[in-house]
Amino acid sequence: MIYIFQRAQTVAEHENLAILKWSNISNIIETLIT
Image (cartoon, rainbow, N blue to C red; front, side):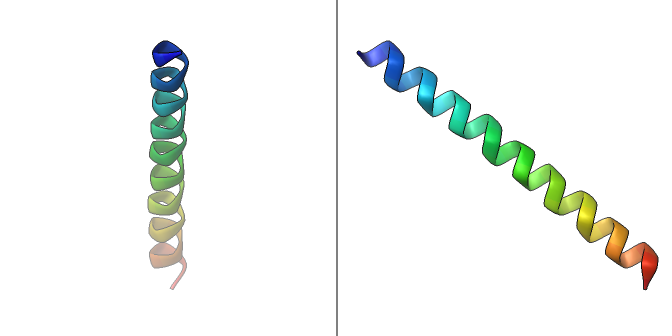
C-alpha cells in the first residue's frame, strides 16, 4: 500500500514538472512574440 502511494506521488511530481516546463515554454514564446 505504501508503495502504491509513493508511486502516485512520483507520478504527480512528474506531471507538475511537465506543467512547469510547459508554462515556462509558453512564457518564452509570449515574450518572443511581443
